[in-house]
Image (cartoon, rainbow, N blue to C red):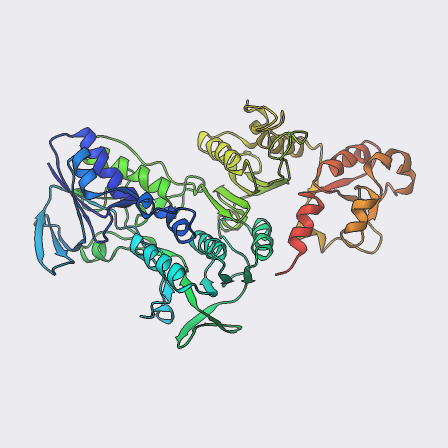
Length: 548
């Protein structure tokens, strides 16, 4: 059997290695149009910033090492330009010489990945304007930053690449302006969680401009980035407007395409042609939570799909069971992570959902170095099916998002998070791990022990005296800042001051993190009051009330 693989990196290189492990006699040819067959594309921004100092660390395999270990004929600088499905051949151009030739195949695997979104307004030959997809892109940006020492940069777009590039340029001493069309950074998060990243970007000197659509480029002595709010001049610009599947070859070959031109496959990663498979960022997938068809350009799914495609073209019966978008990103001193779906997606899918927001510490607070994280967990009412989670904070965020991702994949209901038996020692967690705490909150909601209200509800709360707005923090905390209209009775004083409250009026309670207000709600409820606890606490409220 002869297998031709178009594209390397996560999907293609993984498939090539797996095929060899399954079939020692297969002839494997891998075509990669860049100069690098397998590289750490997620590490590219960190080479620009100097965190990864040696360029060789970006290269996971070379054609020589790939051949030595796997006997894969990996050809860099070779671009597939046409597929003849009837004749089962691929037309290839050797970029260094311009020579074209035909490569036959028995089975073909497409792993072309995704390419940067570059609208006509962003296209230019100016070498001070960059995208960041390949190792070559990275070297060009790195050499410019190190050699020319730019003082200013504009980053257009605030997804993973935009945020990581902004951070790494800032780390090089470049003053960065980050512009974003919408009202928040990092689309996998909801706006009420992204606000913590907004504050962190500004705190680290990034000029963050939200709701500022990109309109074009002008080049002269400086690069001028044109926006709906005027032009921004800089020494360099990075276009990070997202990615789209790189599937022109598949389209020309007549394969079935899906969203945004992505390649349609079955669960075996087989395309509409039974002898052609596909994997990676170019492939349309089923979302594990909603079941909807979607695009998720992440390295983890690409690796899994490459392995599954390899299994099946070697005669196996492996299935890809969907993506849930588990992701994590570093933004200066914060970590942001998500899995499953967010509120925007839940609403669009018509799901009847609820949520909890909490602010637990990364480990026992009496052990030095504990850091607060903000955790948001979504679940379906009735079934209690876990839908998604988002976490922003410092240490321990990655650990908790992986536990929640596993719970979603395993089909645990949200209330069962409280029963997870998770490792505990003071330097690493608390006896009640943050994931357990989310389960306790959900269990209390479902059991009716507490009712809650959210940030989006605060503005519509009556201010005519028909309800009681209560802040249960200390007088010192209250004096430093509080939500408009909320009066202060510390929770430890509440039992002795119940007479100050009108039991006929609903009480809306807030504290710093949600714990003391929950305790207050239990006191008030058992004393005849209708009571609602603010989800997330004043810390969450203040973060969302701040405007950028």
